[in-house]
Length: 434
Image (tube, rainbow, N blue to C red; front, side, top):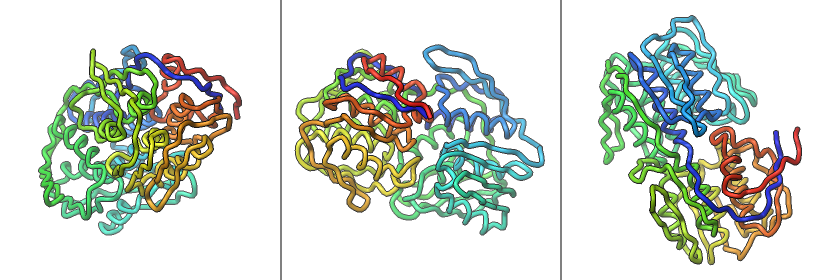
């Protein structure tokens, strides 16, 4: 892993945001399950997306990559040729989306599927699937001891399913992709408040584009799913990623002169909530020439923010709140504890090193604004891509340089982050290889 020393200097210029990882995952899987050829364009090959591509190939999809320039590729995906092998290996790397989407999908194919992975993926919860597999008498063996080591076999049965609303929406998405292909009709009932609902809307939109009909009754939080459906080939262009844009949007709120380009104004991405959050902190939004600029005009805290629907933007939002006058509380952050790191603890720990006044209280972050961050220290990414990128933006408002440990963890979702950071005037140098 690589440690980088980041100079304390502001950013300026325009950055073209990479395509949405969440949408790319979903489109690749839907196209891989469809009969015929689909084109999925404007894809960036992060580690997570590469894991999903290889997973679909292991299930029989034929996927060809064509360079599209500007660090993007276009994918030609031919589905409808399901794997008939007696067993298969799916390496999810560190991708929770790949793993949780593919576990129920794998049940559609004969034979045993062996899932492996790296990092903390083996310790991330899979209890809802284990419960379903056990209740239906299917084979489910999780031997994970640090690294992921999971084997499943057997086809899910149509019927009534139930999941809690406060678990990862990835479990819901995995079932929504699978249940329409079963022989009978199914329901999926959500109990308790549904968190990260924006991700579910992304799922439903992609499924509809690929010919799958699901009736979602929002008032009852129940999905009505007809069986015996089939995915239809379709072309899809992936839009820009608000979860990645959040880093540069927050950079603008902190006083950096940054234009963010490549975002859809009418996106269904839940992480678009970063813009209303920044407005609530007093930032001003400027839309012009196909880009968005966030203007700093004296950030004011003294507010409460609900982070339950967009956990991925919370670390950099917390950074922004650290420079806002008054107290900011960001609530409902329990699921940050089970990401690539304990993001709740990591955010508090690393920003505190820089001179922020930030505390974890239960499942909330309580932040007292300070005038400036100091720097002149070593901070850890916790091998978490979003912590690494948050700390990079923090460097732009520090008084002195910082060293970020394991800064190359950004490759999980945004492999060209450091190149984009440098294009805006950010300066960094490699300090240590280990």
